[in-house]
Length: 191
Image 1 (cartoon, helix red, strand yellow):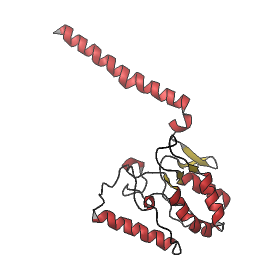
Image 2 (image 1 turned 120 degrees about the horizontal axis):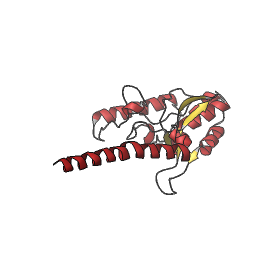
Image 3 (image 1 turned 30 degrees about the vertical axis):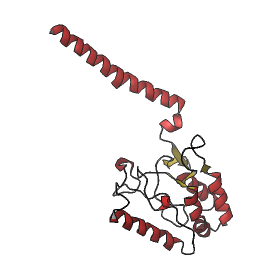
């Protein structure tokens, strides 16, 4: 009995040290060495101060900014501590009301825009924190942003194209743009 108990205790302590201490330290150390920016949170800076992460969406509501995907985190938008989708199915009337309200807000912000509204501008992502929108979503907003900033629409579209990221490995996902990075560039052009 003592032999079995001793062997169990040694195995428990060994695995605890290996999987609970050594492995996390090794992975953290490798992450810091091989991917220092990502390990530090993929932060974006303005004037030497961190203002957000390229991995977590930021709420933008002013007309001069490209707006990101709606956030499903409540009560605060884009709250990383409350990451998660709304879990509302397509037949849920609450989801339908939310989408209709988002469509109305987009139409009110740019009444002359007759383009179809891309779905990612009216639906939240599964995490509720998506930092990127489709190129169609960004281009849909270009005219509004250009007017609000006193830029030409062509200038805004060119910046969107400069910030465009292609499909992962050339075939996964859709081309997209990071909203925070694009808005920082727009602020650098004309706040």
